[in-house]
Image (cartoon, rainbow, N blue to C red; front, side, top):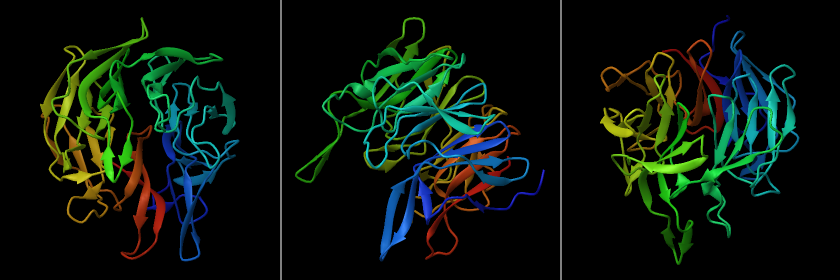
Length: 366
C-alpha cells in the first residue's frame, strides 16, 4: 500500500462538487453524480453531472469511470452484499424527481439500468436488508400527493420490479432510517399531515415527531414503538456492530443538540447516552467495525467554520472522547468505512481562508 496524501482533490471539472453519494465498494470507494459548480461572470453556476469515480485503497488514487446514462443528484446509493451498488431516484436539470434506478457493477465498473421505482423520488432514503433486498421510502419534493413519501417499496435480489412495502403510520419526513436485524427502524422525523410552505414570509412545517416506527418484513407493515427520549430535527443515526442504533444531535426549537441516545432492539426502547463534548452542526456519524462510532467534522457553533474534530463513542462507557483529528477541516462531507476499518471522507475544504471551495478526499485511521 502506498502512502496516503493528507488530502486529494477528486477528479471532477469545475470549482467544487456537492450532492453526490459516497459508498464503499470492494477495494475502495465510489463517488456518483452530484452537482458541479463552475465560475460564470462574477459568480458561480451549478450543473448536475453523470460522473462516477472510484478510489483505489491499494494505490490511494482516484480513477474516472464510465458515467451514468443521465446526470443525477439527490439520489440514494446502497452498497449490496455482492459488491454492486444500487443508485435510486434523484433529480436533474429536466426532472424534479427521477423514477429510474441503476446498478453499478464492480466487474465491469459500469452502470446498467435497474427496475424503475413505483413512484419517482428526489432525495429518497434507501437501506439494504440482511438478505440483500433494498427498501426505499421518502421523497423531498412535495406535490399534490403528500403521502407519497410515506409509502415504501422493496426490491428483492434478482427481481425485475419493485413491490409495495407498506405505508408508515405517522412519519412524513423520516429521521434516521437504520436496519437492526430483520427490522427497518425510523428514529423520529416530522409528522404526517401537510408539507413545507412559506406563507407571507412565515415558514410552516409538519411538527416534529418522536415516534419510532418499525417495518416488519413478514407482513410488510409499519408499526410504532417507544419514542425517542428527545425531539430532534435532522439528527444523525447509525446501526452499531452489535445491532443497536445510535442517534446523535440535531436541532430543537432553534437550539443545536449534542445529546445522544441508543436503541435496544430487544427491548425496543431508547436510552440516553453520553453527549458530544464539542458541540457542532452538520456532524457526520459512522459506525466503526470495533463497535465504536465516530462523529466526524461539522461546523463550529460560534463561527460556523469547518472542523477537523473527530469524537469517538464507546459502547462500553457510553461516553464520547476525542479521537485523532482529520487531516483537514471539511464541510458538506460524506464518510464511508473501508474494508480495513479506516474511513474515507469526501467533502469541501478551503485551502486559504478567502479561497474558493474545493472537493477533496482524506483517509482517517482510528
